Length: 299
Image (cartoon, rainbow, N blue to C red; front, side, top):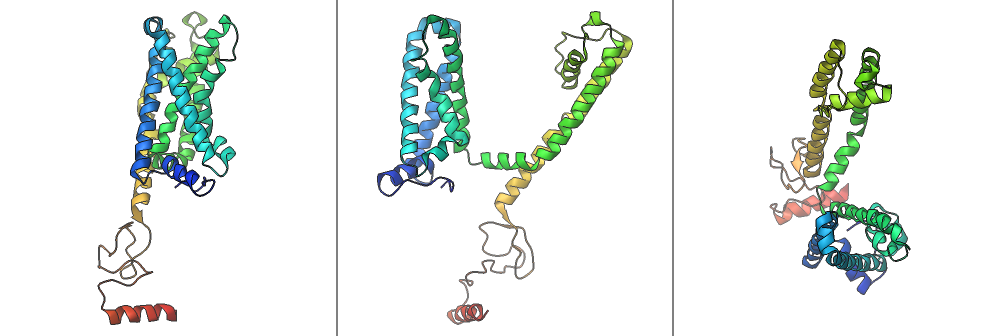
């Protein structure tokens, strides 16, 4: 259960809350799966509608399907707000904002007048692709990724800052050595070239023509290959740490002091000591368990 959200009361609202916001029952899991399928289908319709040939031939069908999905997601949002004790709290959350963005464009099309506004409406409809972000709510492992990003944010920021300094330095140098005819008309333009070269994308729209500029390009590309794996390694290490923290407990064994046990472990892997300090070992005799409780109460 999401501890930040609470049902509005007993009865129907609590039942709806358990189905929509929880996933520990078959009905709740079925709701999540159905919602994910609807999200993917709606995004697929948006993508197909962006193809001119499909839009010209199946435009009416696409609009009908869009309205169908809009009504379904509007009802779903209304039910979510109905079963919550504080619906405004949900609307201010990330997923509440995504829900609003997902349904607003189609409803806005009803009040946008004039044929000239059709282009604006079409752009607004593409915002419904943000609905795919709702899928993160149904992925339990998404929490591990978020935790890893938070813990590695300082390292990644330092890495990006270092890259920014390198890009600025190389851009300034190449701006000095390359003629304007080569496309290096300003330092911002040279920064664009440096970023494209450092990331080894190589669009080729701006290239150095002098030997010194070409030598700088080689250096930037080699540096790009050298450092491109740094943020990946940092993030991967934090993901592994998150997985271990989620799987293993830090509580030490009272017998040998070993502190790397799985969360559900009952006995120590090394010495076999009972790990739960709140209850006695069930394999003890009745007299031993009684003595254990007396000793605990004596504390």
